[in-house]
Length: 373
Image 1 (cartoon, one colour):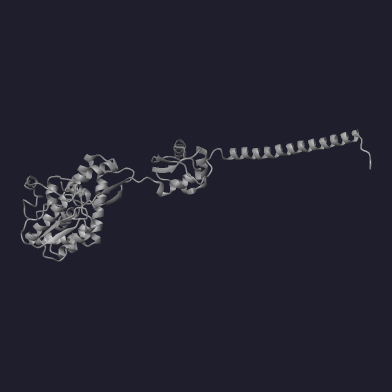
Image 2 (cartoon, helix red, strand yellow):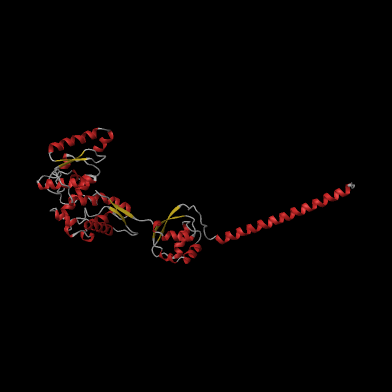
């Protein structure tokens, strides 16, 4: 066996340690260089995208912006930057230049998302789904003075402007068979787009035009003539139907009750007409004093139809007025105000029994009693 002296062992450890140190230094240099390159790439990437937001699966918070009419591309860009939709104006201008459809961006209000790539912002501005619509609704069963506050709130148009538009039947375009008496009953119940700059006369005109469209679609004038009434009379009947019942199966029956009573020369005695005459909203009850009001709309006091429609009737009410059910009924009475269940009778004796049923319903619970108050 060879003899190993202490000096040889020391030299071997020294040389081995030197090699290990060298390898560690080289490994460290490689690590630093590699990470330096990755960091440099990250810096370069950040600089490349520093003027635009990077696409993300999660959109930022919603924000409403308004693009005024005639706004230039740079003005739109600044609006979006101020709202933190896009990061820089330059990013938006570049994206707009790359998308020829960007020239079609319309003025108006939009509900966008914050911190999105400029190209996505342009896509949103071109999508009608992101545009805030200025809508208003005509509600079935309400008369003009009842509708107006809701119209003012939803459109921002002054109340006096609506009241003026209501009086101008010629500008509103009501049918000739109305003899230009009123726009009451001609504002068709529906949801409408008011546009960016709504005006009372245009709003009223569009609602009347929709009535005309619906009336033509159901042959309103022709079918009214077929049952021996004028379209004006049929409209008045439809407005009463709309206020008296809400179940579809009851509407044609109410029409028949009205026509039967008119044929027999009986007063209609409809509480809905008394409510209109007294401007009573949200109630099915009228008092003896209210029913004594001297008004041509009061069918308790005067025979025949009221002198005009008492609300905006729906399409179903219009159809019922010109397609009355067959029957000898002279009376009808709701007996459940929640379900709308209504009973139709030929005689006053049977009708009085139905009135008692309603009274029993009213007394059945405290909640029912409130609805009967």
